[in-house]
Amino acid sequence: MAVKEIVWRKRRKKANKRERRIKQRQWKLKYIYKTVRNSCEFIENCSARVEASFDNIREVFRASSYFPLRYLTPLAARNASIPLKVNERFGGASVK
Image 1 (cartoon, rainbow, N blue to C red):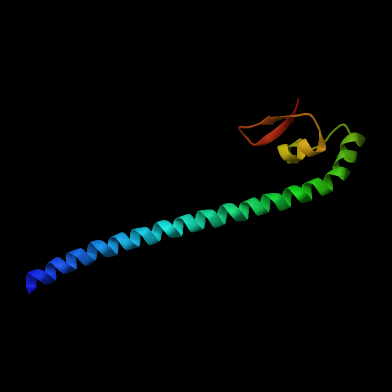
Image 2 (cartoon, rainbow, N blue to C red):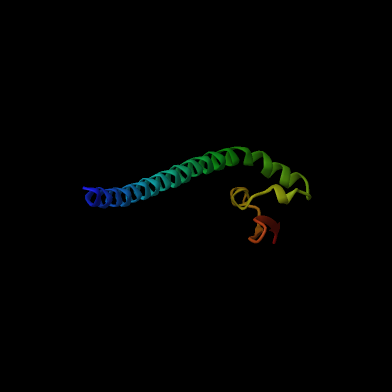
C-alpha cells in the first residue's frame, strides 16, 4: 500500500508540474498577443492623429527656416514630406 501511494504521489507531482508549465505558456502567449494588439492599435491611433495635425506643421516648416527636428519622428517626417535622414541609433531624425 505504501509503495503504491509513493508511486502515485510521484506521478501526480510530475503531472501537476506539466500542467503548470502548460498553463504558464498559454498565459505568456495570451499576454504577448494582447500587448502586441494593444500597441498596434495605439500606433494606428497615433499615426492618424499625427497625419491630422501635419497640415499645420507643414505651414510652420515653410514659414520658418528653423524647426525643432528632434521632436519630429521618421513617420511624421514621411507624412510631412520633409527630406530627413533617420538616425537609427538614437531613433531621431536629422536633415539631409
